[in-house]
Image 1 (cartoon, rainbow, N blue to C red):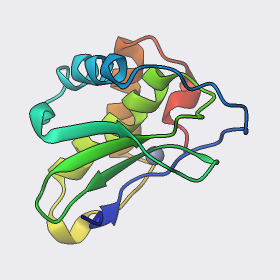
Image 2 (image 1 turned 60 degrees about the horizontal axis):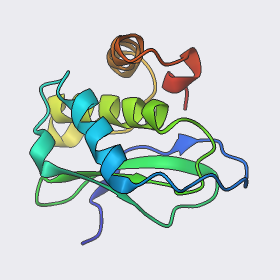
Image 3 (image 1 turned 90 degrees about the vertical axis):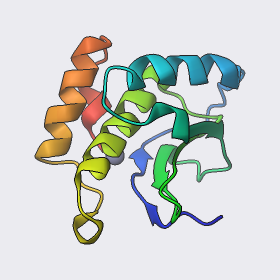
Length: 129
Ligand SMILES: [Zn+2]
């Protein structure tokens, strides 16, 4: 299934492999963050994917309406930070109508992302692109 729209390219990694975090741990962490929102957490899949080296994580919505967060195994920043960023994208995305859906790092996104960022003790960089 190809993503209908790529929501976010959360940026900036070096090539230093970290990896090794079991996906189950990241799914638990996702569920914790997600439960602070109104998202349909059960219908969001979180998994490692082959992403370009400069992409830490990506939130997508499929044409079925299901959503997913893909994570780069080689991300060199905290997965909590990446998950907070991508969850904020999904929250905003869910609020928008089909035609207005776009990825953006301003306005509503910043507000939602900063709220989650503070709740989960992440640094300011979390809400940057
Ligand atoms: Zn983003």
